Length: 154
Figure 1 (tube, rainbow, N blue to C red):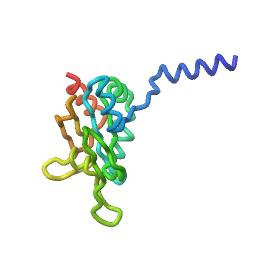
Figure 2 (tube, one colour):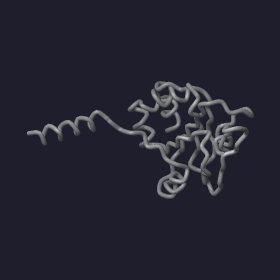
Figure 3 (cartoon, rainbow, N blue to C red):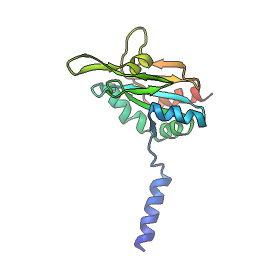
């Protein structure tokens, strides 16, 4: 009886969509593009940005958004202050220090700069050829982000 209860409990969790957002690395996306081409959505953020944290805790916890991102896109979560070198699209990008424990990653600058500045959070959408087709630097709630995903899918 206990086994049956446990099985029903886990099936209930699965049925209610207890689904995790699959955040990929740029290296993974490069490999996956050889198998299936998809648009890439890059979420560029920092640990100190309040709107970034709010998007992580609301927009990217929404089950509809998680399902759409996992099914139709490759999602990359990029901390703009990431210190490791990242290889993407046959190019290596590095962290660029600008002071005492302060700096920004070259890839974040390349993908997130809008009007010669970077304002967090940034959503950068790349097409199947890794070309930037959209940059948006502002908070997007679940409803607006869902609309954006619908338009990108077309």
